[in-house]
Image (cartoon, rainbow, N blue to C red; front, top):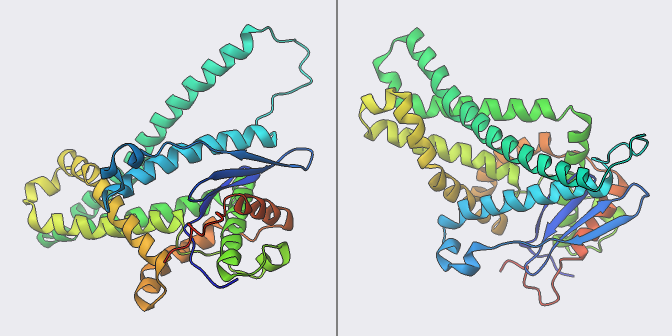
Length: 320
């Protein structure tokens, strides 16, 4: 088989991997008894209902939201299949028919509350906190020209927070296993793109850092955000830039543009391999040293099963 570039991508789950092909999205999860559960994933694609959502730049934010929704559902399902969230079966008190319903409602409510709090925390950490830190730096330095560097300073702070967060969670046992599955996903896709047979021994030979990765995408968004914020700092009046209650909402409103540009860049890096794309992809690939780990053979087996199930017969996944 000749070398190709594929549009197939995936996501690491709890004891499993989700692979997304042109026609099918499949998740493979290791069950408690050692078997592999294969489940099809139903997705909603807004571009199928309205073509504008598939346009360049616009599709970046749309695809990100869709990927987050699908990824979260798969993550929760993988936790159930793998037994990660299994309740204590030795409980002495038998449950009534109503109790599972109540638990389901409570879980749904907790999920919604947790999602809202997660968004608020992200806004505080990556939007408001960098602005506060910048304000503190400005108070200490007291330089009139510092305002034009606000976008750069805040961007560097965001990147530092992002890397620090990834480094911190990578030490957690369960997260580390997810990162190992992430490595298995990348190595398996590389093996498929190389034209080698999808076997555990073949997959093990490949690197775990892939240019078309969610981690690289997030990092690119941060870098693009620096450029956009820097331009705003030059063209907007100092009054607007210096007031966080105006500056932070402006940055939030510009997220779709930031996301859209980052998405197009990551697609270019996945399609082409030259000095420019390697330069663009390099920082994201470095960050993947935190979000991917070397997988075990059984994790690679999961990745192979997931990938084999989404490879189309008509080569629709091949990037020309």
